[in-house]
Image 1 (tube, rainbow, N blue to C red):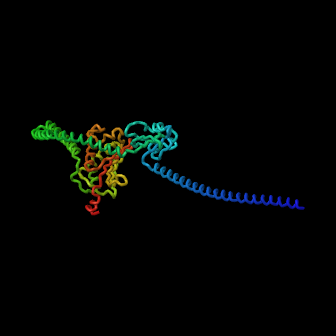
Image 2 (image 1 turned 90 degrees about the vertical axis):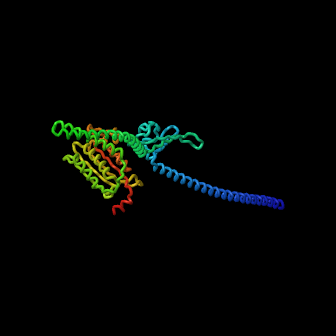
Image 3 (image 1 turned 180 degrees about the vertical axis):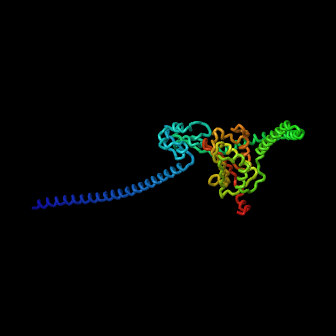
Length: 407
């Protein structure tokens, strides 16, 4: 019996030790599980924080991309971006307008091919865009942070307004130099011309009894008077300043010019229309000079319609751009044959004319008078549709006008 009891006690101790070891292992396993759970929770928190930071970063990048894209599309400069192989990878709306090509027709194509298709691959200045604008083109190499070339960028600038200013300046300089020479010649011719007129008048008196020979003297006198009128026009061209500028009602001034041109405009096949807007009732000008300028434009318009048409005179308020100074616009339009584009750059040159009986001084005088008033002359002409010549005068002292006129 003693041996059996000892054996049972030994097995009980072994079992008890086994349970104790199991409990210790279970406790260790529980602690490890809790530690692992805590670590997983900590990793989850770190991962959630990382994901939130990544989400915020992606959102910021997307907002920045959208912002830069909006800026690129809002630029008034055409932008074309090519990759390292020379293929177009990006362009903006302005580039589409300048090149006259849709974005889908540029992306993926070689940059040089795109420029060549729009005829903008030349090196001249300015470049003529398909839509008629004057453009300047500049190139730059795109580089990454380490300075390696990754592509190229082409910038297209609309310089149409700048070119107009350059042309006006060049024309002013050219006409000023020509005017100085013409003025000196006019004075030199006018002195002996006075003597010719004097002797012709004396000859008419001496030939009262000889009508046939007296007619010769009268022809001489008429030719001298015609030459004197030509010289007077030349002197007007060389003295464009307006020292007698005052406020004048626009409508009577225009009607006076039409009255002076009645010999050319009162025709059955010619319809003359006039409109004066309420906002352009008065002009700050030398009335005699502006009437002369309008007269020249009206005569030109009438002569441009030998087979009849419509001659329109419009006086309206104008503004040079959205923020430019106010001005008054006097436009004379015809429905004639229009002007050859090759002649547009020379219209205001003295002695340039396309008519056999023209002197080439009418438009030159108009330009000189308007320049003397610190204004400008604009021309819009289409072959087969007619032409419009507009005198744009600054609304000088607009605030003074109200006080001066009582309006």
